[in-house]
Amino acid sequence: MQTRRYRLSTFILEIAAILLAIIFLSPFYLVLTNSVKGLKEILMDAASFPQVFKWSNYADVWKAIDFPQAFWNSLQITVLSVIFIVLFSAMAAYRIVRKPSRFNSFVFLLLISAMIIPFQSLMLQLVRVTSILELRGELYGIVACYLGFGMPLSVFLFHGFIKTVPFELEEAARVDGSNPYGVFFRIVFPLLMPIVVTVVILNTLWIWNDYLLPVLVIGGNKDLTTLPVAVTKFFGQYTKKWDLALPGLVMAITPILIFFLSLQRYIVEGVTAGSVKG
Amino acid sequence: MRKALRMQRGWGQQIIFLGPCLIFFLAIVVTPFILGFYYSSTDWNGLDLDKAVWTGAANWKRIFTNDDKFWASLSFTLRFTVVSVIAANILGLSLAFILMTALKTKKLLRTIFFMPNVIGGILLGYIWQFIFTKGFATIGEITGISFFQLPWLGTSGTGFWGLVIVFVWQTAGYMMVIYIAALAGIPKDLIEAAKIDGARAPQLFKSVYVPLIMPAITICLFLTTSNAFKMFDLNLSLTKGGPGTSTQSLAYNIYAEALINNRYGLGTAKALLFFFAVSVITITQVWLTKRKEVSA
Image 1 (cartoon, rainbow over the protein chains, first blue to last red):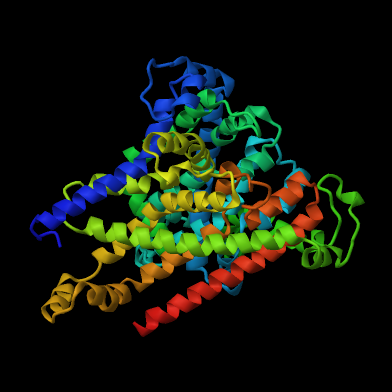
Image 2 (cartoon, each protein chain N blue to C red; image 1 turned 60 degrees about the vertical axis):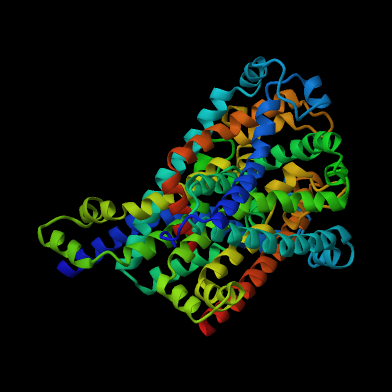
């Protein structure tokens, strides 16, 4: 298809696709332009280009939601969770593939079956479990929750990949006298990089954007509020302070958009690979 | 002696490699799941479980005989799922076909269409709340097109379509990249051969493309069905289930029952039903499309 000539019909298709892309982007444009207007101007005319740029909106929001703190909280929770998910799920998958005992096969089956359970079917009991285990309102508590929920898909992805890693490589190392942990970390793990990228990306997007779990598990602890949760404070039931809400939205989506645009090749590939195998 | 040592080392490895994964999985996923069977038959209010009384089938009776809102939310969720799954897949597949042609801007277009997918549902819902209530109103005033002058999100009908629009906008690009990967895997000579044999576009689509990308269709239908059926974040931030409770999804109904009405026991019972519904729907759907894969 690459070799086909660029014809008039292709040109028309291109124009149509670009128009559609503009429609796709227009919500971002409206949010961006209105985020630097005063509330009156927003309410009177949401379509016009701002007369004056009211950058103070951003400064107000920065303080109101304590942006650096919320950003740091989201970052800490996401990075810590992802690191441990990758580590623990790779180790578990390795053991399951190399020692397919009856018990290990059962564990694998259990993990896969759990993928179908919707979060809402667990959340109420989870609130109870996290109180008993004293995980509520703590950084390690929310990370522990993400570890639990992240295991099934990640183990599944690693499992599929490790099956393709030839066993001979490990045997050679074992003959050389490496212990099993050395074999895993120095020989097997580096070979897993392609699937590590997929696991990291899928989990990062999920955890960074997650809303309900932080609300339930972090709850009242304001010092741990994540970015998506922090922004919700501008969306009260009756009053809408759009002049604060819109800059808040822009600030909340900017980090993840930068992440996406800078790594988009890996993200598109990772997300595709993750869904095709999952 | 040596055998015992090896056994011991085997146990050590088993615990070190599998242990961390199992501990978190058992504590966070399996325990709540099992507890759900017990809690769903109590009048637990979310606070003190000690006072929660076993009520037998009372919750179930209430759901099946005296909970119109739950069944309304099930019907809403089913309608929403059917409409948005069809729309998201048609748009996703069309975009994939368009981007498979020799467009000059196709890399940029792919990025743009995929972009909404990386942003969380909560934030997308808020963005669109602004677009529907303020943006559409202004555009309606300027252009006079009645579509934009509808009371967006103010009625159950516009709320429903509002959710569908945002869901499709968020998901279509994701489906697109999966379909592109599938289309790129089709051998070129196969298409050429069909063309030489005189296949026209509709025939080509129905008899060549669709059977060859059936695995991708299975995946995309599975992903969209399960995401649409479990929709929560969008619901919370875009319509809050309103006006009234007319656009409440099942997931939102469970959330409201527990966290707003403080009926955790009843909420757990609904959550258990929700789990069975999700399982039945997704397993049936995968089974149906998988059969097509084989026959192709």
